[in-house]
Image 1: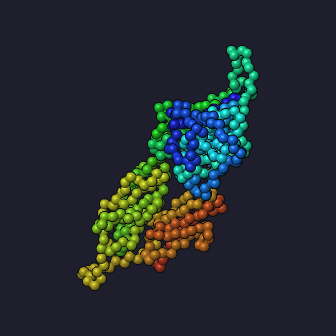
Image 2: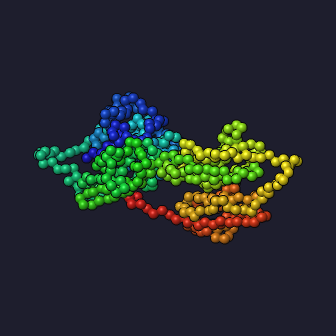
Image 3: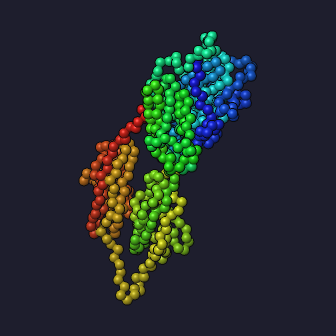
Length: 501
């Protein structure tokens, strides 16, 4: 039987994987499994003759309790090929990768009659196909594979039946010069690309990280594969590609923002072709807000306004972090986190103190390396009512509601909770009423309304297209009222080319 392509250890080739070595709970006993340093192939030497013992069922490790940090079991574990000394299996990525991300897969074997599972490789491998070599004739093996994150290994997927290593009987060929190519025995098969599940949405990496994508495909005779980046040929100085009989690997050693874009893989077989597109986004920390100023100081309150950063890090912002520090101690304290508007009112400041304020930008990579700080101090004056100077006019801080940050039109995806934001200024504190299509929605468990530091937030839990419409925020106090509107549209995303298997 023909032997299929072996997935080699990426650490031994230019296509190094981005995953670091992860410790796997299963120990590797000497003499059972060895990994070749020169080739990266998984090798299993013939074991020493063990003492006779009664057959025993393999001991299956009890799976750990479900956790959002641990990936789920790999899908579609399949036996691809068996020869007289090797076995090849493949699988699909798990449904859930875990919050900490995937570090690779651990393939384990257990010989029939043994009680211990032995890892095939010394560390997790970022591949979805592996070949185990140097097996002995007559071996019967059980195989299983687990996905691994930094939080540990997830539950395993196991082959339904043991694999029996048998001797292949081949017909001798009397004329070696007339050998046919391996693919000439098969009818042409249309090419098909199987995009891994985790690459069917935008693949995000940080600047400096490694990009290592393995895309399986099929077709006969052997397909020809080509890659493009945003419709142009790849830059060979930055991107390397290795294509085998059943997959193509795209590798970038140190990703830069210029590597972002759409990568398209085209597979050709005798005039037929298949295409798949993968979107890659390389991001980094954002810059700080461009400017900030102190708008007003009254009573124990200070109003701030700032402008968004010039550089968002090649991705959308998650919000801003606002901090305050009084002149006496110089210590910074966080007032607001992941705050979306660009104006805010800081309350509950201490009379007699003077304050500075600073604002950080934040995206998926974290807070900006520096913050933008107010140039002037906010002086919170002492109120001396007993001895007012001549001509002193006491200021009335009462005012009708006015929105300093309106609602913005928003588009959301079904099933993913979304939030609407606006900012209001008023004294005394106003009553906030939320409406959808001019109907009050107070008390509806689908919505959660919050009002803090002048910021009004409406959370819509797992919206559906039925939740589309015009939303209104109304603020009312004894001096008047004000309202702002926005339109929310809930719609699904269209499938990209190459996503369907």
